[in-house]
Length: 446
Image (tube, rainbow, N blue to C red; front, side, top):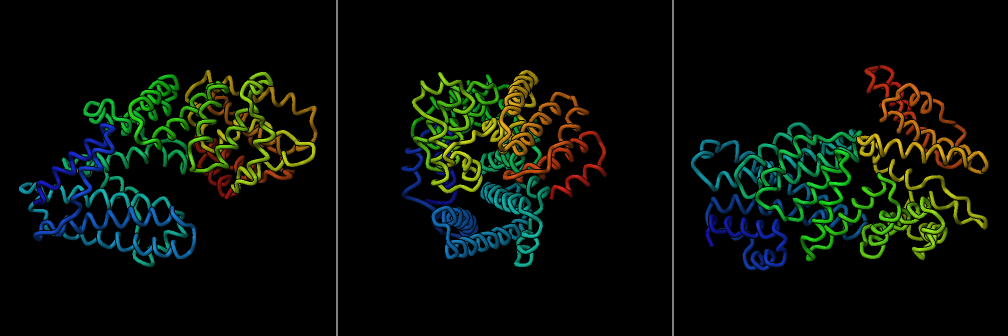
């Protein structure tokens, strides 16, 4: 098989994947991966080799959490990175071929995907780690990485959709979880639009369509699209689990706890990603339901919370310790606390009606808290912070500032609440344009 035919075959396989025909794609690709014939083929084979090394390194990290695996994975990543840098040098040295050669266009698309992904990924690391990596030859420039991926997504090559999907993941997940919750949804929609027309029933495309709707606050539309995604295929169950997770949150934002429980329960039964998180989340959702609703499920939040600590998870394990006493002390609004942990308030804040409903729930919990002095400082601080966030998203900034500033400091167990209250206060001042004050509070939080 020559290079041109190999690229066409791979494009066919990619089309099959995007049309939910995963097994057919695998069968097509099995016989022929990265064969080398001529010099042009060799540079493409180098590119494929770099991609395979990166994938293998990722699997090495996931497979076994020990130092030997970490070192082996690190060596593979370094080798992959060096090959990509060499490929970029070849690309820069042969720009005159860009207009005349289809194989060069394909090569260019692969290089932009790899270099862009590496730069973006490395730029997300803490500065002290990045400085160490730069010492051994790595570098990460976020703007350069994003620009390379944008050029790669516009490049008419086999890997253009992979560049687009990388950018979509960044705008709809990474920037939300690692940042302040503001992804570029306009750019995300523009990236997705051509593939919505080409693969209207593709589960990956439907998933991102739903995710963008959720980030815009249109939870009803998001739920409909996630359900379409579930119905689109049954071969790749991991996509089902992603949909369950997202549907759980969409229902949680609307305080539809029984529906949220259904998806939390499915995750506990089917997914192996993190049993501790899933069991904790399920217990947290049960805690928001009425006694009669809990009875209908056949589950109990106390038993589930007690189960979490044995599943070994730092955050969930620490939070569930209150249920291990002879007389369990209930957590206050644990589902809303987890909503904050996953940056959900920046999403639900797009919907004033849902935010107002959450505020009512928080104020009701405040009233009940006055009758339970045990754990009062921790619970009071949590409720004040969550209430302050709701008020912030409703535009009642002075009230939000007062609550976040007044969060008590006599915490007994949940010490994370103090720096996060300071951090949220810093973001509030940043929103108001007081950069000096914002910097001061964020530095204090740090």
